[in-house]
Length: 440
Image 1: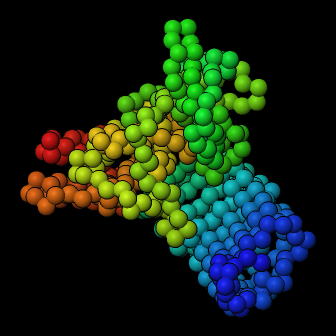
Image 2 (image 1 turned 90 degrees about the vertical axis):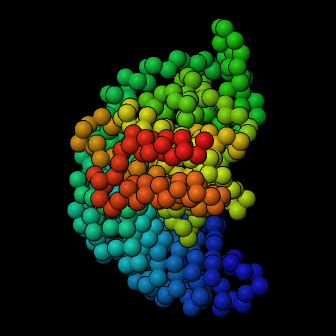
Image 3 (image 1 turned 45 degrees about the horizontal axis):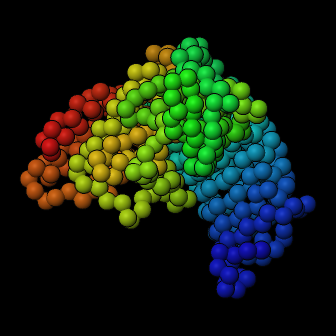
């Protein structure tokens, strides 16, 4: 067993991670029950837990992804401090009533075969993050409306025909994905998908690797079309279900979004690749950097930030204006971003120009019943206002103190716990433009 601190005596181990195949639960884990807080047995092939698993009274994190649990183990409900549980990719079919830990904050059940969520999830009042993409859900239990702390919910790639109305009454829900369900607007998506030109794989020359995410690999390359040769970014999708949804849905949402000065524009759809689908994208200049870092196990639904990043008032306003413009454009085209985080934003360090990227959690909608979706992204934007101003260093003069006051008022509007009372992105842009005029 590996511990969080190699020098710790056995009885003080706080973290155990095993990855080799296991035929049974290792009894040695229970020998450190008095101190163990983090248990990761992902990829070991386990399918059951011992009846006395509740002896792990200090356990806070338990990972069993890529194992063989067909049923969510009820033993976890007897762990009084357990807050984060992951069973990604287990071919799980059933989550029994009363099996969820009472202090649960973060639940990962991505890519299984689950047909229903237990009604008892309503007792998980501390639940903030719930990942259910890639299952066989047709609906959510009404009891889930009692999870008032829920801030992020992933429902993509299920069989949901209609989003429940109570979903939009959750005061902290800011990040929602539901692509790949019957409730999405597939016809509208396909209509706009045809507007991008096809790009032959033979016309692309792939150069250096730029990055890799859950849904695909991005490389720098050259596109040789009839008129010219230009530098582009080439994204090839992997094909597996991610925590946000499927790469196919991400590609459709990206094409539906179209071109905008504050989006990373799609230029064409790759055809003729021997194995994968992909997109040719705008190549972002090197002077752009990522604004934030993804949430940690501790921050759960909120981004983290490097201590090195500091913004001026002008940069902060430019970033916020750009993201609001991009989000407004998306909703005008019936696309909910669903992941409006600082770690999905690139910005020009000199001017503050922002580019919103990563459509992995984006969902296409056209039904007016879902006009409240914009207000969810607006709540995410409220978090972004708070984050951006947390890393800004405004001057202590009358003008910038005035902007800070106006921005605090806008944040209050966007963070209103009653969704319909939040402003639209059009109104947000109007207020930010007025502030930007004052600062120029």
